[in-house]
Image 1: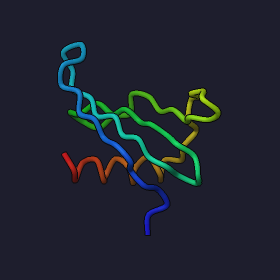
Image 2: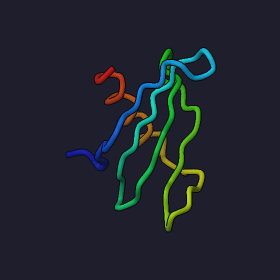
Image 3: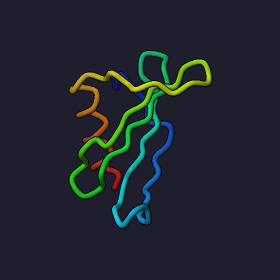
Image 4: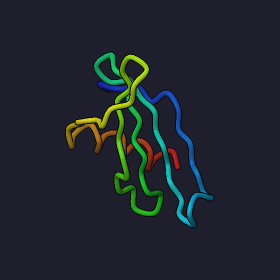
Length: 75
């Protein structure tokens, strides 16, 4: 069983000439968002949402790699 649940995924193919994939998910009862560069799934940014505020997320490499692998399967 996954320690996270992807709730939304947006593929943006028109921003600044690059393609990006933004993935929203829950992990340990918190809501997160990671934006990857679509070409190589490099992390562009990651955020945690708490009390109507977005904060830079401090996610482990393991969680990021699990999300990356699932995004790769879906695109």
